[in-house]
Image (cartoon, rainbow, N blue to C red):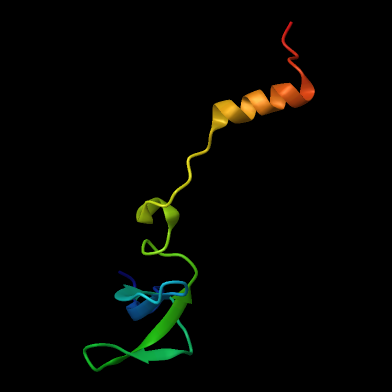
Length: 83
């Protein structure tokens, strides 16, 4: 690797804003906010809106879209334009 062209890659804590769950990983992201982690060290804290802990797909709360019903609703409203 060439020196001086890569961003600083360091430990960062990401926290889910809706559930409060946090995890420590490495990233190039920076923040002025910090948090003391379980190991006693202080790391930059980045609060995010959605993580796997709160995303509907991963939590099993995902709604299924009834596409066939939507097509029928469209046809009822605008008629069947097929010839």
